[in-house]
Image (spheres, one colour):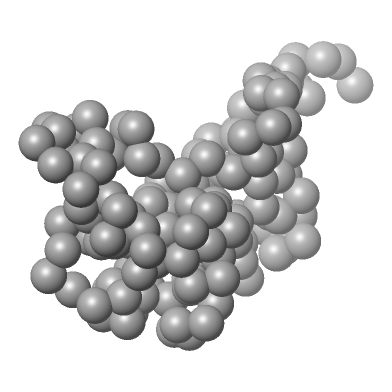
Length: 149
């Protein structure tokens, strides 16, 4: 087997993985699970999880939760919603899981974040506030470029 068919298959796999990531970005507030995401790109759940982690550095579930927490942060900064309302608005079904994951990613519980963030981003354009407050998983880990070949 030559390198060209392998490279072409790798590019097709990456395109499928990008479509999964795009679906998560679009539908983060809907009930999503790895099995459903995998069916959508004709992969097994295990294969999707391994390939997604290899390409993007985290599992599909972790990526989904990061998107949900990112959106929750924006809603909490804006104000007007309770933490419980934000939890369900971003697609989480358990307040406990939401609060635990939020605290892991952001460093403080959602209620504390809401109080602090409202003051910290006051007067800041929303596009700048989103960038400076975006949750980053594993800040200590060195950034690695995905293997595209």
